[in-house]
Length: 436
Image (cartoon, rainbow, N blue to C red):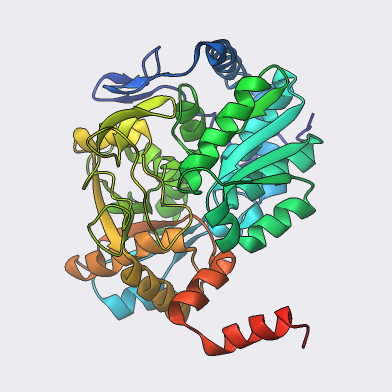
């Protein structure tokens, strides 16, 4: 157990706001008692998993309201993870684009280099309270796997990470670090060998080891109560943005933009502003390389409602209901589905969803690096790509906040390969041949 030596009201301690529970939007509770966001969400799982999910729901609803749980989580956020993360005014980028002022919420400066540590710490703390002896997780880009391995080490629990073989290859650095943290990384060779297959493998493990195992799910999706848990734990991002921007500008932003795979970083920053219609919310999906199946991950431009991996939402699927292959230059956005609250918010027109193409993402990554000296993750660069088009259309007194959900050092292999960088390729060749 962690003891916070400071009072929760200490202003130097960062965000002391309790975890938000059931959000209210236009009088509708999100989610309802069955875990539905309108027609989406719910719990569609084998019978043998239903008691585990009910146990998890009861435990979370109890512990999130306990001051000692919130105190311990605040302590870990502030002193282990490094919250609050900075909100940075990108002056050079703003001036080069013209139009709106651009602020960057730098989640990549927290522990493990991405927003994933937010829900990983909260769920590990919950697993400890529940008496679980083992953690398993799924991962695509590797940042959730890295965060899960990190918190498992912190809490003294063994950790197994399921990761598609394709993602193991393109996120080799994260795989290496997960193993150094003591986690067992299991490459998944079934299906498309990407994130959806890693989720399936983790669910099967949980099914057979449910008594002692905590499934630390990595996004705001899956069967109830996971979308609610991840949203609540990630909502610290939006709360901080509201406080920080009020200090800088004395008002709310005009736009908040985030990339969307499953949707954890997006719902985390959106959540604080859902009841503020004057704040426009934009989610950016992976546009990939084209419109054909397997060339993108645009769930709202090609997908349809369905039930996959325990919940109802929009999924890329064919006429027979089979999940289609996806593509993104980022390993974290190539998921065929999207979190159920995002689907509901899109149908209610509270959040606008768009997409960015691979070449636009690379351009955004390079522009931010060269204008501000910040290396953004490929996932976050999708949001930047949209802002590059949006900002010049706005007035200079309008404000856009971008959630930089992770930093880009993990993507060195992806970026160098895309740019066909000869020096990097020669370095890799020399290293492999033992010439260094």
